[in-house]
Image (cartoon, rainbow, N blue to C red):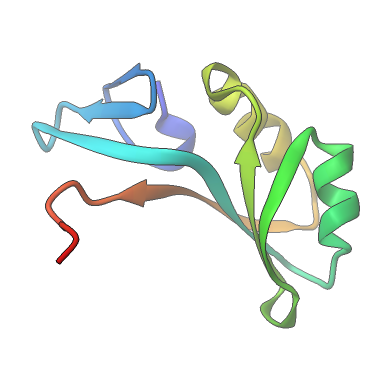
Length: 101
């Protein structure tokens, strides 16, 4: 379950997550938005944690990282949560209701 991210009773299927409480699918691109409590070398952090840095927001101590193996995302999140320099981890979700014009 993805309770580590505040979701309850969730089943995952590829890169979609079903939230039973909301009776809705949540889709993700497999990226994590990580906010740090202090300045961090984001490339080095990515390399040390088997992640791929996709967006660098060093000015606000934040980076967007892609998890290499989505099936291991929960384990990755649990390992990251143990690091003292991490302030917040958020799953980058996509709204299926939004369509291109």
